[in-house]
Length: 193
Image 1: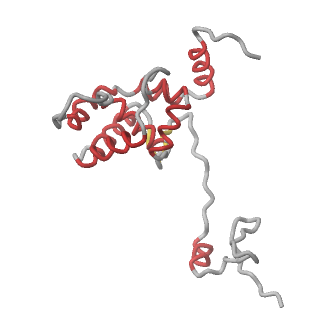
Image 2: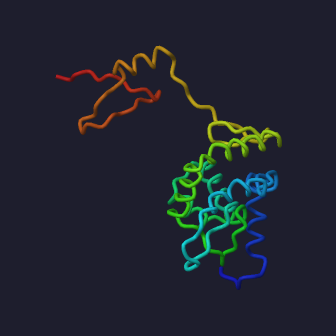
Image 3: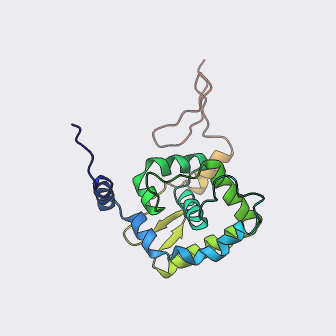
């Protein structure tokens, strides 16, 4: 059932999204993003040859995109897609629907400029330090606090790892693909004559 759009549609959707998960609004409010601006502005210190063309994107916006990219483990193409698609990403980045979204090449170039200036690691270390001061901890590319629980990952025993290294768990199906048994281990096939 379609109804005419209302002035509060986006706000109502964000409210519902944030009832389901408050991760991005919490991250947005916990960090003073402006503290990164002076270091990030070093990327723009190179003199522009011409004033023609679109003005560069805000450096804090670009850094926040890199943070999202890192937290969600997204490639440049995927982060552009997600920014265009997800209300919560747009809200985190303070982008309205009418705002231009940086394309994947622009995102890649900004990250490369930070690397070339030796700023990327220092900025992310400062970001992680700020999160720690706010009671959050970064582990394996994920941000966690007391309300987030890491999903347990199954681990092989030393014996199983040794057998895997020796190729004892590998079985080839008739079409050449590897097949996994119910325990999640690869079993050595027996020749059928």
